[in-house]
Amino acid sequence: MESAIIEAMSGQLGPALVILGAALAVGFAGIGSAWGIGIANEAAAGVMTENPKNFISSLVLLALPGTQGIYGLLVGVIALYNTKLLIGMEPPAISIWTGLAVLFACLPIAITGFLSAIWQGRSSAACILLISKRPEEMAHAVILPAMCETYAIFGLLMSILMLLGIKVQ
Image (cartoon, rainbow, N blue to C red; front, side, top):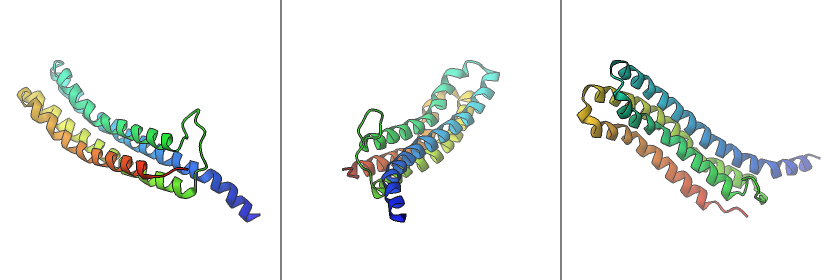
């Protein structure tokens, strides 16, 4: 009886692990983006109380932490597509090991996306304050938070490379 239960669970556990990996990539990167944008929004709202013309320059910096959420979404879609778990696709049998491999492949963007978006939001907030006092520094102000983005891109690249290396029967 135990072997029948384990066998039944193994047929369900592989796909569940893939879905968990995709959910973590999308969820954590998205939460980080929302958090980072929120931090930058606080600074933008503050500088706009003094001068509403700061909106346009603030908007550029507000958008930067949102890219990590897009990266997480991309990895989640790739994970589901490669395992044929998207709507309308006939999924193959996904082993527990394949499911674990996909789950672990989704973690780099989940972690780097979450953390880098928050730090990028903090950096964007500081740069919003900078350009409110020195608008001529806009080019420098965009580069500073973009440095945080580098690590999200590394996480994105690693997740994609690992996902592309997983063979699904």
